[in-house]
Image (cartoon, rainbow, N blue to C red; front, top):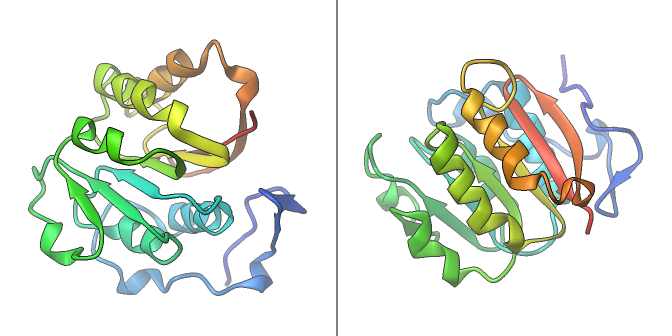
Length: 185
């Protein structure tokens, strides 16, 4: 059984695509991690459609989702506190950081922001407040552990970080605990 099309039919970010248009990463070959195949497919669809600006991933762990993003990013910035191990040797061509604050001034615009780090309200809110203004027009924000009640700090941080700019963001889709949003203005 092939991947389902979770995104609305038609186009997003000026890119028309269907599941027949492309072959997804063979997810079984990726490092272990918490992402399901369905979540990886949605992340990959967003990476494919995101504008041509650097991609930023906060929370790398063993690199499962980073491998998917690396397939489409012309420039990849990875941020992780190394609590799950030191991933940096695996990514010699990516810019790597141990804190968001070390990276934020080096990336003027972001094509895709993927957050799967600290899942408590304060740190997620702080990351979003720093980085959402840098997301390019039609850029994508993907938040893992957003859907469901396991980590309510993630969805609460998104709501608080975007409450004054709700019309700037459109939900692209959700699968499992991953939710993705497009910047409209």
